[in-house]
Length: 206
Length: 206
Image (tube, rainbow over all chains, first blue to last red; front, side, top):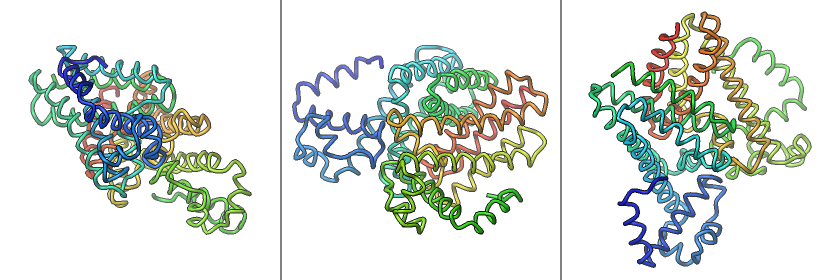
């Protein structure tokens, strides 16, 4: 992920603040582990080991335990993905080219992780559907934020508000599904094809 | 799910064969539980309780334990979803209308389960990405089968082979992603919009 100056500033502040740094390490570890193993497959002890933090400090920052950690992990994945999406969409003027560029970015990320690290929130959200309203809300917020970023890009180019709203839904849904299909089949083909079709669909509304 | 005569015949044969019936009950229980809780969140004991089968009979049918059960569960979900897809696509002559009908079917299913029962294989497949090649292969096979059903429908209406191949990819990816988005946001809107856009995309190739 390309870092923006804002992120660099945030990270350097985090490095100077040991309390914030510990919390941040815990959230990142939880996010990465739950992305790969799901909510039930990830224990607090494993998170504390991965974060090089004591169990005591994990419970200090997250007295609500694993549920609270999962919400923070989803929120972290939400913002990380939002930043990648914003950067990719900003790299091209034409929204069709911009979405195509983002599918390539996702395919590269998946291949680099040997098809393991897909969407940062889906695994956690799906394994807790119906059992944790807080996790479900955090995931719903993430999807809404990502749609908003696509919506803004489409509106900039003069696409009508209702069309932009609907297209933003389909862009995010299709990216999610194509990333999942690519991950499962260990091939970028679903993302390559999704990029082509989304570009065609967007162009039809320009 | 609407039952076809073939399913009825299969179920009645299963009811008459107590050995098959036990195995079938175990697979269905594993499939339903893993769909909701993921692989790590589902224990063999819970499956045996849900299936009203002894732990001994679970290990008798599945000596490979939970991994083997997960592969059978994914295969079960794969075939169940394939039948629903085939039925919905067969209900309309026009492939665009047919895909739209299927998005409505998915939305009804999700709403009926209070937004809990989404794709029957995604939760299991995602939580084991990178750790179980057998589960990953079973999920890849499922996606390929579903694409094949869409491909056949599109080819029937004269869409060129390459276009039908690509469209089948995007139809399945978008349905997957929209189902996930609908589940997370507890709203049929992502599926309704996906149906409209997929119909538009397919019509552009007719």
